[in-house]
Length: 124
Image (cartoon, rainbow, N blue to C red; front, side, top):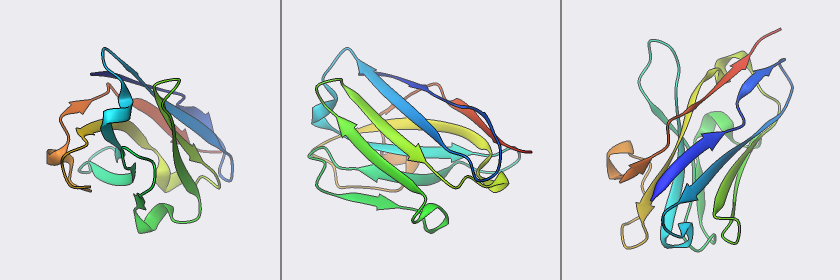
């Protein structure tokens, strides 16, 4: 499955963005999907994930109450709604897919397919 992340941009602190992860080649419904981010000079970190069924999600403490992940299998797309953005949210955001038979994981190495990343900059 090929993934393409989009929706990044420049936003002021307190603002919102919605990232999209569009899948092609195969249906996304067979995959858990996670969002990760990497800030300049830092390691890639887990942000949020959603199970293949949509029944389970997990999130990093740093985004609790601010970010929401969802999926639309008809559109073959997973979304990350980001509200109340902070400067420390500035990073390249990546979506990744893990085949549904695997256990839900917050570890990047567990994911089989990756999108190219979209840059989110939070600054006044």
